[in-house]
Length: 124
Image (cartoon, rainbow, N blue to C red):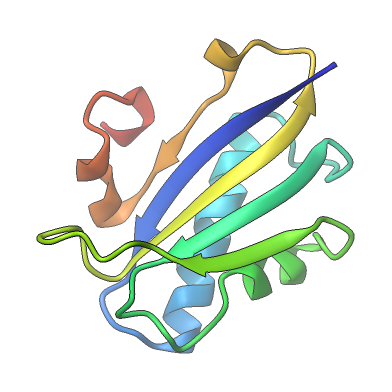
């Protein structure tokens, strides 16, 4: 079995704790659904969340724990401050134990984050 990465991103209109948690939950639910992982977190080896520097009201990992991912190692970090990058952005990288190929992983981009990856089908 291999470890594969699944990427996703979303954004919020304002740095409000509830908005950050709702957007993160929405992103995780869609990533899990799209990749057939909604019934078990056993395949998730770990998750790394990042936020842009303008988001300080909540740890995105709180949303993952609220979904039941309490046994999954979770880490939050800050994105590097690239000029003209998307503001109020939440990103996640899930590491999945799977027999699927990397090409079979479905990456999800929601809200304003869709413009980050116009080449990804789910961002259309």
